Image (cartoon, rainbow, N blue to C red):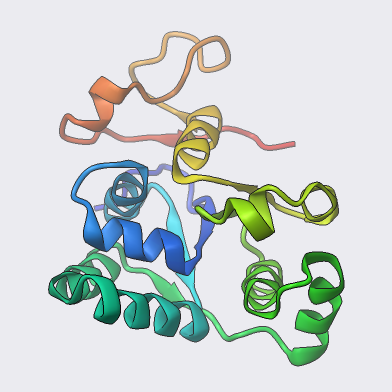
Length: 184
């Protein structure tokens, strides 16, 4: 069952920190993003490198959560995209200065993601030069949820342009049908 009347769902590229967080904690923004993807409100993209990094971190820090990660990825119908070519990673590494995160950024850009969701404040979110250069939006899971509110229209809205599309209350209820606002 699709919750969107429009076939173009927002695309969100999740990095390893978000995968780890969503598998480790049953509450919080990262898990809620996967729940929204499960109901076809958004598409979550990941790469083999991101998946490998998240699995390694879970094996070291929370091996009991590995199964949760597999279930979340499957339920959300997450799409695995190819890692970006090395020349694109090299380009972003000049801005980021950290190879693994340059790979994440290059892959998110190459995949055509609209949003890069991360908890990495050191190399990504705190890097003003990078944020200005990105052709997509980057932020935390909470920031991404706020962004989704601005582009989704709830059937509960009387006027789709003067109120948030999804309230926290509505996200905890059984989902309704949502539409995507025109994006400029």
